[in-house]
Image (cartoon, rainbow, N blue to C red):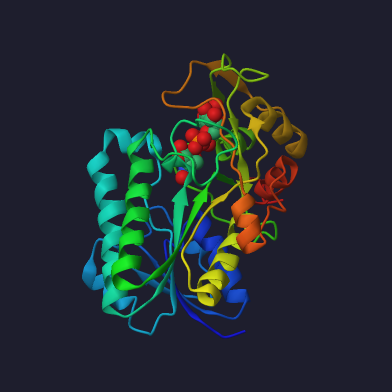
Length: 325
Ligand code: WQD
């Protein structure tokens, strides 16, 4: 395998750091570019270069291209969907302007390939299930719109500048490295599984379950949880696809299997061996009842499917980070 030089924006963050560890172990030369707003130095691989910088700062960004980069992995972004509805300008800048800065720098530095962290949030409320890549794109929050806008710009840059991109639309990313290489807990999370772990490890008193009157078997919302190691595997396969096929790629990353909030809590209790203190409260605005991915396209084009995304493995992997065991 050819040794590549890979630039990873947001490489100290939750998902990015997992992929950096895999890339380093494969023998690639990695450069992490991260402003540490949510990323953690603790998550960096010792054999990876680190540049502290912001994609909004073009001078800092240029430093990331001091060496000839073969491919960019772009994770750096704001991701709290609720916050995007209150502070849209922050998301417009951080996600859209930041990504455009990066793409322009790629063109200036003659870099052709990019793997982009997109999201199931581009689809909005499901019109049918499972959601495939042709499903209408009608985001219900501004965060989802920023991801869609970046995908559209990638498409135009591909047409006009000849770049090749992979847009990977994650469903509900969760879990921690099953080998325990990543130890930093995500800060200020609003996602279900880390909140469950915060309650289990007494960092938080109670979990609020947002609504039990949805049209699902137990009344709570159903989501498609995908383990971060499975996401990493898909990134590696997407990179090979770009380099070998020279075609763009837009795929969902999920399992097609949905789990309700109460099923998640139940599986967490079994894996952790503790009861999770929770209370049913009102619905959270904007939550669709049921979201699951079709991953047929990723399977066909990449030969990818999830291997670690059952809830037992997910919570076992999170124990290492929240209980150090
Ligand atoms: C999961 C389920 C909640 C917290 C988000 C983003 C989305 C994408 C994935 C990145 C829902 C319920 C949650 C809590 C609860 N992100 N819940 N109590 O909203 O499906 O998706 O992450 O691209 O854009 O919106 O994930 O983890 O917040 O919620 O009951 O305290 O858990 O209602 O049904 P969500 P989540």
